[in-house]
Amino acid sequence: MLKTLHKFGEYVLLMMRTLTVPERWSVFFRQVVKEIYKLGVDSLWIVILISVFIGTVLTIQISLNISSPLIPDFTVGYITREVILLEFSSSIMCLILAGKVGSNIASELGTMRVTEQIDALEIMGVNSANYLILPKITAFIAFIPVLVIISMFFGISGGFINAYLTNTITVAKYEFGIQYWFSPYYVTYSIVKSMVFAFIIASISSYYGYNVKGGALQVGKASTNSVVLSSVLILAFDLLLTQLMLTK
Image (spheres, rainbow, N blue to C red):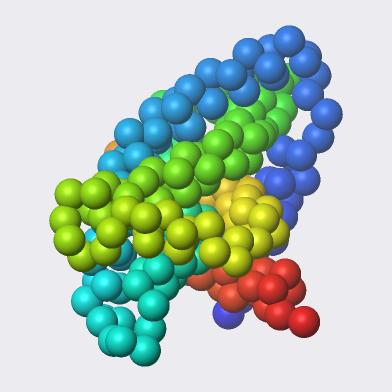
């Protein structure tokens, strides 16, 4: 318990140092653009690939499980859309990105710590937490809505491809289902959730990487711990945000 409180205190103090006004805005914006490409754009391929396959699999599984004359066929498209919008493109996708982006951030900062690059910045009078961590958090939060929208599009497109190539459901009924009783608020809800999750992933991974003590083995351990804790917190905040934003 005391160890957990100690780590939480370290995390809060690190975020207090991180979330300050950058000393040089031009350098900060250059770093943000660089991190957007490294953390966001480089994640596009995995988001697109997984979304297409999940959308296709969802359509197949739903059509097999609701094959009843009492349930209209367009329900397949409707349920596929709801699952993708409400849960997959925000929560599940962020769990996947926690593994890719989180481990990337933790290993990068951990390597800088063990090779004493962070210590060199501190000696030069630079706020290393603000200089290294804030651009990563800002970039990932700024780009995560793009990844969510792309995931929604390709997830629903995966179901469309399945409807077009197989006889599980007709294209016309699938199209009607994905348009039926559509609530734009669900898109907003998913984007807000994903931005919270992006902060969790970037900040937790930065904390573990920044505070590495030891050598290469500890860098790998910090990377693993950051992914595990980020995933647990994403699930916890998923429940909390769902209660706050969807229940009346």
